[in-house]
Amino acid sequence: MNRPRLSPLQLDRRDFLKGCCAATLAGSAARGYAAFDATDSTTQDTLVVVFLRGAMDALSLLSPGANHPDRANYEANRDSTRVPYSGTGAGLALGSTNWQLHPRAAALKSLYTQGHLALVVGAGQAAPNPVVRSHFEAQANLETGVGGGTGSGIGWLTRHLVSANLPASVPVPAVSMGSITATSLLGSTDAITMNSGQDFRLDLGNWPWNAADTSGVAGLKGVVDILPSLWQSSTLPLAPAGLTALDALSLFRSIDFNTYSAGDTGGYQPAGGASYGSGGFGLQLQNIAQLVKRNVGLRIATVDLGGWDTHNGQGNPADSYDYFGNQVQVLNDGLNAFYTDLATDAAGNFMKNVTVVTVSEFGRRVQENASGGTDHGYGTVMLALGASVNGNQIYGTFPGLASDQLFEGADVAVTTDYRRVLAEALVARLGNANIGYVFPGYAGYSPLGIFQSSTLADTVFKSGFE
Image 1 (tube, rainbow, N blue to C red):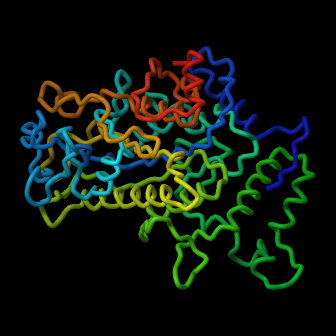
Image 2 (image 1 turned 135 degrees about the vertical axis):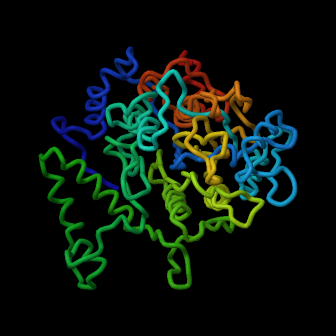
Image 3 (image 1 turned 120 degrees about the vertical axis):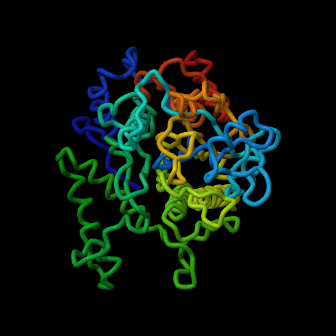
């Protein structure tokens, strides 16, 4: 993909964004970062952030097992939402940890046992920052990464992209899967927002955009063919951004994002027999997998899985009605297909350079409510998936479920700031040491050891950043 070089008078889009973000965050960014770390980001890794929107009930996804010291407290607080440890609907024991996964997470358990999945307990937006139990505010708080309040409207992933020293030639640095841009990528000129790859094209309607593809008339050029020649000589400030958008459109035109079928034999065939299903979550993960394999330079991808706000009729795996279990199944199947597809491809194990981390705005109350559900809580569980994850382990400190151990007498306490996990992923896998800039106000970072470090990350730590 050839893009004209900018003259010295033209402004590179990343340099422009760095300047804007630096000015915007001058009052809130960690002081002392007059310049970004000089180390170039030479890693080719991709970080996929899965947001479980609605506040996932961590005590149902990962519940105390039969011999867990908090099993009695768990059962005392849970009846209609309880995951049993034996009999119908029993949880899946995780070795000698005394924890069990929801029975609808069988593939995740297998990935855990194989050492590709790790879990972090007691995770969340740590005190002393104000605890917010509003979905909207808590999600904005988490995605701006500032620890309290909603920040300046610049997402933490945007600050990562600005400070990661990416090569200017990366065609598609970031994608936000969905109808609107994830707040974590707000302010980014590097991110493409789309519901699906197949929709990211301007082929429809009467306007002859891709006339060369659709008209059947020899020599007929569409707007997509004409605009580059017009914008290459343009001095308008938006011309570089326009060329970037055209680059992405041109690149995506060559990719069939549909799934292989008898009616579309050019469609995508996942490796290893992986099946993403027909749901939106699975198909968006499939699109991300395609972009990873196409080597478009993808460094960041965000995708949402909503529906976790279980105030009423949450269900449990021992009954025929199990709403929460249905949600777990979607998560389980999507992540398993994604891992299988990328890890077993004929071209190699792409999962060595792909890391998936799940976040949720907060957890649920320990005590279930009278409507067979759970209300807004505090601490939750994070998942980390990848071939470079030190899996088969549970990280963090579980604070306990006794009444005197609960946060404000009602919730699982937070013992691991979610930024500690995300920061480790950035440093160890993506090679970005500018944690104080990505997460303004976050101090005292130390890795938990969840992620295997790249050569670059080892160099960063040896240089004294840690």
